[in-house]
Amino acid sequence: MSIPVLTFFNNKGGVGKTSLVYHLAWMFSELGHTVVTVDLDAQANLTAAYLDEDDLERLWENGRTPTTIYQAIEPLTRVGDILEPNVEKVKQGLYLVPGDVALASFEDTLSDSWPASMADANLYRPFRILTAFWQVAQMTAKHVGGDIILADVGPNLGAINRSALIASDYVAIPLGSDLFSLQGLKNLGPTLRSWRALWKKRLDNWKSPDFALPRGGMFPLGYVVQQYSVRLSRPVKAYDKWVNRMPDVYHEAVLQDSTTAATPSQDEECLATLKHYRSLIPMGQEARKPIFHLTPADGAIGSHAQAVQEAYEDFKSLAEKLIERMNAQNSRLQSR
Image (cartoon, rainbow, N blue to C red):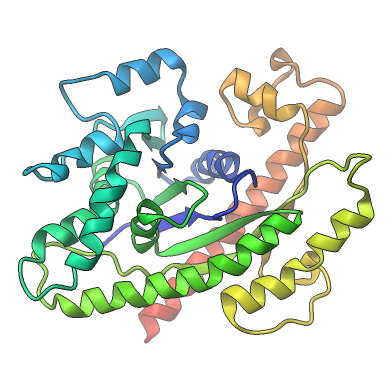
């Protein structure tokens, strides 16, 4: 039985996606889950959030054993097969498959394998390449006893993200409160449906695989509104204008239905509206810990200390809601 994969995806950058994955991974582990995070963004920002430059140098310049996602799948670009990477243990119950800036070079290999997977023969290698991310994630999760996999991906609709999404059972969509997020959301919904349908065709084309394959369900769990601070050049009225359009656009573009919700707070598909935590974010980055673990020694005093407590409750509520929705969807699938 495979370990569920939850991917946080938006083809619009700058919506706080990586920070969201980072904090939720910590929170899931706080709630008793064993979490494997997989950095599938060639910028490797999630990896840099966990590790310092000395650690990154050790991982990226290691020539003996695979220590990153790219090093684990790189043999597929030649005549080899997937290798199991040395997973990084962040703490008990939280593990990282590190990202790698070299991952961008795998894009062409994935692009070439997509049409090849619909051929009449010799399908082993194309399917092995297309599902490499899923194979590595499952291999790692089973090795450490993981019960959930969280994936971070880059802000694009390219071949790397397509392979990341076909490896995903569930998708959560972070949104910024601006026009660009709404426009990105309009593209994202049809893209998910297209990738899901095209992957199903490929699964049907290969009736007897020699290894397990992901279902590519990509079930949308909902969206998260990242509430950035309001500046003089962008008043509250402008914020409300964009954020209040999110329910309609999400339901139409992603779910292909309609809603009567006038605001995200009234929409059941809105998983959370996260506050802007201002100076807590750089504090957390400097301390290399989630903002809800900051202490007075890290500079979290006065109003910051109160914000730390609020952040803990916000992320705890969001993590519990995600687990609840994943369990509900899994129950529906099993009852069919």
